[in-house]
Length: 136
Image (cartoon, rainbow, N blue to C red; front, side, top):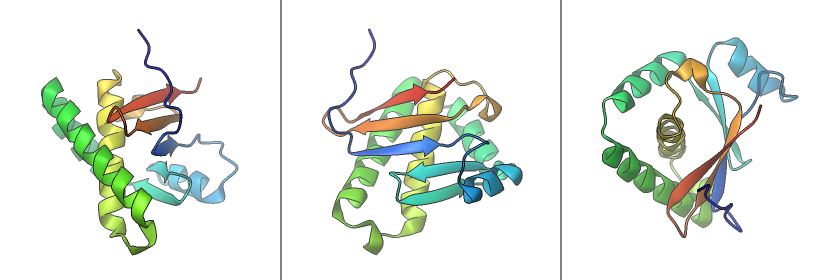
């Protein structure tokens, strides 16, 4: 049974397409890295090496550990974005966003980082879980 859309997601993470109108997104893609928009407030760049390393780690984690790590990263990110992202440690914000996004991709059945397609992750704070909306 599909999960219902949260009425008001606490935040969104978006992996924009290669043909995005955003020049910075296209530059990140041209470098072979993965762009990640955090709640339309911050554009992060996940370097190919970091992506591969994080993915390899996630592959070996049991499903329960993936779920626990996702809940922790999502809750921390929701808290920071609710309070004040301007005073947050941006390294921690990007790290939590990247962890949550990559774990969600893994949990959604993506087998390799190359299979990640443009999509949006909605965080439901009430259920403390993500919902991934993939675009064709």
